[in-house]
Length: 110
Image 1 (spheres, rainbow, N blue to C red):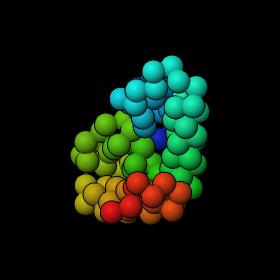
Image 2: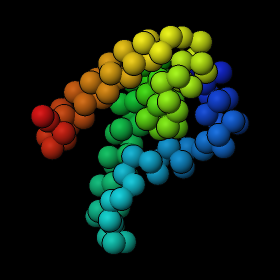
Image 3: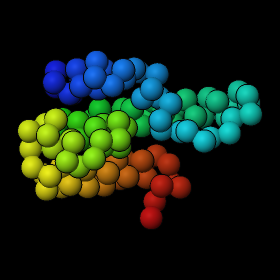
Image 4: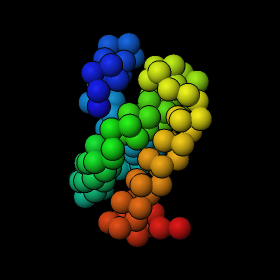
């Protein structure tokens, strides 16, 4: 993640690593079950790794759009690129993440 994006995610939006871990599996009912908590943690770590393995131009768009919830226009402005570039990059990022997830977690296969 480049410095501008890192600053945007942390300073401007009070973004923390804990926030990143909380977004992926919101709604998972772990019922304080250690096995479920461990699986959720493992999935979170895998997803984090998959996000960071994306090319930076895809990773940052994914983070801004899907983690931070910025609109296409806001992400484009933050990165200094066109809205169509944001749309293209988010599609590629999601497809690549889906492919990576489906190799490890069959339930993500279409």
